[in-house]
Each structure stands twice: as C-alpha cells, then as structure tokens.
Length: 144
Image (cartoon, rainbow, N blue to C red; front, side):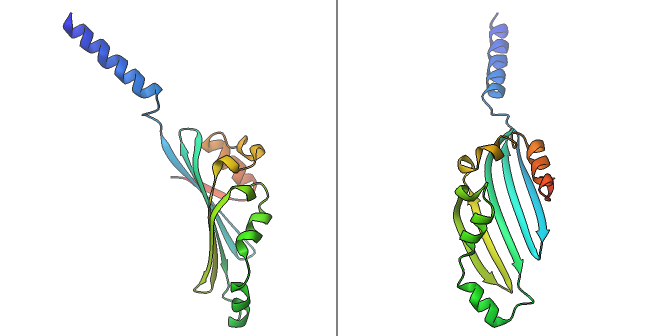
C-alpha cells in the first residue's frame, strides 16, 4: 500500500514539473542579413514558443571611408537613425549603443519584447514562424 502511494506521489510530481514549465525548451534563433555593406543580426531567445529576449546588432564596414569621413560619422546619432528605419521595432530599442572601431560602425541594442509592434509579434508565435517571418525580410536564420 505504501509503495503505491509513493509511486502515485512521484507520478503527480513529474506531471506537475511538465505542466509548470520546468521542462520548457530554450532555443535561440540567429538571423543575419547583409545589405549595402551593412551586416544586421537579430538574436531571438525563446522559452518554449514564447520570445523571451531579443537583441539587434548593426555592423557597417567603413574601410572605404577617409579618416575625416569617419570623424564626421562619430558625431552622428546612429541609434536614432536605426530606430527610425526599423519602424516595427523602434519603440522596443533599449540600451542602444554605438561605436566606431577598426573602421566599423557598430550599433547594438536590446529589444524590449513587450514593446515590439503587435502586428510583428503576432507573426512570431513560435521559433519556426519567427524564422519564416525574418527570412521573408531577407534574413538567413539558424536555430541554436
């Protein structure tokens, strides 16, 4: 009798672990695109089928620019430029940073998932659907 209770208890505990998400699979989608000398990368972290985190990197090759041109670029606010160019994500940009090193302009930002445009999030309900959406926009995605 005691043995049956222990088996039942273990079964209930295992069921609760699965139901409460302790078994939720984490995955990461890395999507890259190169256009006009600029490499753009989205990193999308999932917990199950829910986007848990997203960040963005922008890397522009400045090897054909003169030092004077690079000096002028250092005075520009590329965080604002990148945000306005990506209207569906612009409200989500947080902690945006830019720097120029080794003849590369780099802009990076964490994206607040709760502030990404709803029409975009509605299309990104699973890793597979997110991959499909970003690939429609010209990105090549891999799941890690």
